[in-house]
Image (cartoon, rainbow, N blue to C red; front, side):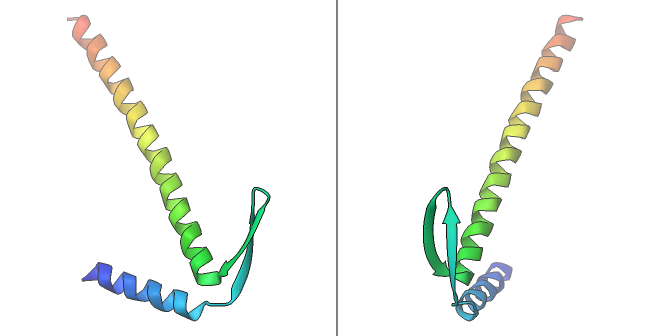
Length: 75
């Protein structure tokens, strides 16, 4: 139910923000509706955060495994 409400709010937001926005990134230029541009940038930001978080979790797991193996060797 909550996801349907969020989806509805996103749809209303995109439909109310149809003014064109010029996007320039890495030398490329494009024009998108403002609502779509903001939605795509939010998705890209969320993916970047998830990627960095996953890398950190893997790093911590490796460190914990090494410590557990070192503790097992000391017995």
